[in-house]
Image 1 (tube, helix red, strand yellow):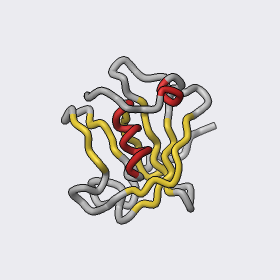
Image 2 (cartoon, one colour):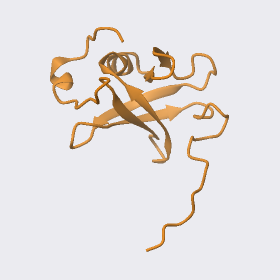
Image 3 (cartoon, one colour):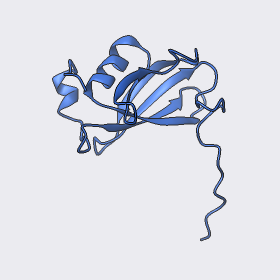
Image 4 (cartoon, helix red, strand yellow):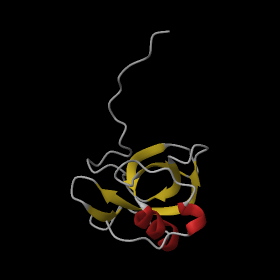
Length: 117
C-alpha cells in the first residue's frame, strides 16, 4: 500500500484494522439500497474523496482498484460518512450498471432466511 495524502483531520478519526484498512459500505444514494462492501486504506479513501469515483484496496490482489474501470459499472460518489466509532465508512453513490462482479444488481443475493425470535 502506498503512502497517503489523506487530510490529517480525517486520518486521525479513522480506526483501522491491523492491515490499515476500514470497511466501506456502498449504498445507492437515492434509494438507500446497500450495494456492496469493500475495503479502503488511507490512499483509497483519499482517491475516492478527490476523484469522485470509488477506489478500493484489494486484499486478495494487494492493489488498488477503481470500481468500473474494467466493467464500465462505475460508482459516482455523492457523499462519504464515517460512523460514530470511526471504524466504518458509508459511501453513497450513483451506481451505473450492476454493482456485483457476478452481474447482479447488488452483492447481497443469497437469502439466509428470516431470523427466529
